[in-house]
Image (cartoon, rainbow, N blue to C red; front, side, top):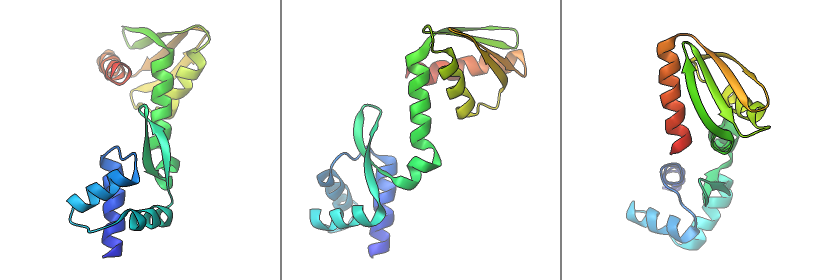
Amino acid sequence: MKTDRLNAILKLIDEKCIETQDELVNELNKEGYNVTQATVSRDIRKLNLTKMSYNGKQRYVHYKDIKSGDYLNQKYIRVLREGYVSMDTACNILVIKTVAGMAMAVAAALDALQFKEIVGSIAGDDTIMCAVRSTEEANLLLTRLREIILN
């Protein structure tokens, strides 16, 4: 039963933005686990959960998830959003305009996110040129990046 409850906690924090122990208790009770705040507190310590800022809110995350990249991906996306000014394609080249001085950081974030369409990129002070395999993939990447940045 304890292992099932621990797995349920990991599933809940992965699927929902759980900010407090009380929220976690309520969610577990909805799932059929009769738990108290004290039990949840012990489970949080056992699972090595921590709170992190995630999309503007504090939420419980599993330390393993932070190391595995999901939390880092959110940081890279934040860099994209903060540095982004505009973008356009020129055949198979995606040109991204950034805030002055942010092009290198945004290019590093793009590299870290490992978009398969990008063969390589070059960053100046406020402009990034990404070589993309084809014109079609450049247009798809532009759409995909806009969805990430503007949502």
